[in-house]
Length: 360
Image (cartoon, rainbow, N blue to C red; front, side, top):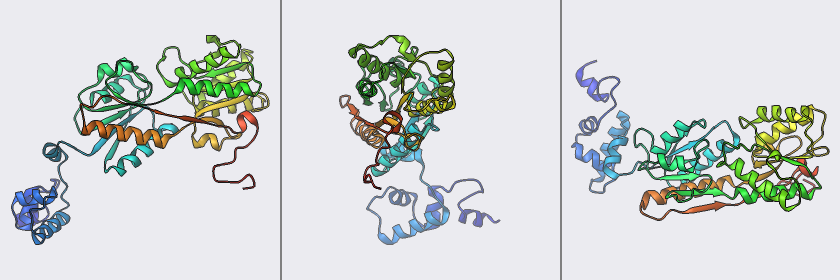
């Protein structure tokens, strides 16, 4: 290939076309190309058309670093979540992307796998500032750990409120919903519920806070509410829940209901109960958390404390964009409500989906 041909193809093989390549192809100056790329109006229509045609032919892409230096914004948001294979976090990631697109932002997703170091890395703003801000849902770091690690990049924290924090928070009232969920279980006549998924070494996470509401409701009802009502499940998920319930049954621990920190734990618990010859809810009532589709299509269908995931996403994105645009604004706290969806696993009655009649 001749030197002239290489120039027409955008430069040496393997090299991305540059502004200079586009300028040569269009027969204009590099400044004119820059004006077109950045949407400035001081370019004649005929000239703009020539430049846009050259960009298309060469496959030129603007430099993210260059755009950031010129505009101070990337229009990219980073989102760091614990585990994308979990239905709740997969749905949350999808909804965040949708909400960001409505505001003309692109989202890059990072999976922390609940690693403390990965969460610190995200809170610091990663290695390079490729985004305008970060949405972080920590799983291993407590609030103090996030605050200690936070760098200069705008950060919205999903989870429990951190006292004295300068960060924006989007959260759920887990303690109150823990009470509400337990009161539903008690209203069915249950007197010996257990809470699956409370870890004493994680007294900052949603599971622990939900268990505080659980114990509070038991105490108000005059029922045993000590720490022996709490059962650890590790790691959070179906398989660990199966093993945990089998261990409870082998140990002869009596319970007539299970309040589970997540839908996945609840689904695993129901599987273990059925494998042990127990019926749900005839022998043991089961309630989950998060409102995922997995619970809706479980057998029996799962009563769950449903989180409004689309609203969590919209609030997180809107809060972060506001922070990017006004770095000095006071921190905000947004509380997203939860709703108990009552299904077969506690009442034996299949809930009618919204918009459908009892006759289908």
